[in-house]
Length: 207
Image (tube, rainbow, N blue to C red; front, side, top):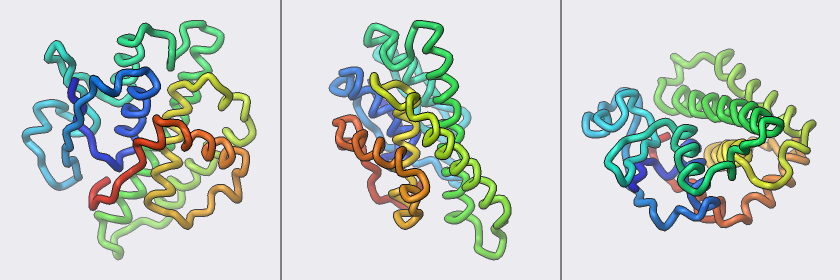
């Protein structure tokens, strides 16, 4: 299998972490794909018409996107019910928690694009504040619902950890741990797992 990715993307990190947690990382070949607004990448567009990373080329020659669908595919490949529980009583909680963490990842990428690609004089401060507010609201929710972060590790944990790692990477002085200490303590333990220790974002001009 080949994963088209960027090493700093929280969405790609979620997939890479999932592969490690599922014992499939040795089967995953990584290929960098630059995807930046305003910089067409015709070659990658053939993999994902939306021009978003990551995308997975399966051993059967099919392309799968987006990150959530790829993680579902990998979970099924590993036997199923591992990162996304089968039991309905837990499944919908995990998927809802994942939707929250995934939305926070969406917000942080929008912040990155607004502050990196848009000229300073054209930026919309109120809109940026709104994106940070969504992230803070999500962190406050997880901080107040720590039972949702208990093991076994699931897809929501991977998405939230990828979000936090990206915030640390791009805005190391953000100080979110002071506001959300319980999530901070959880993330400190998560970073020790091979799935996160081996997938830390790398310096790049993109994402």
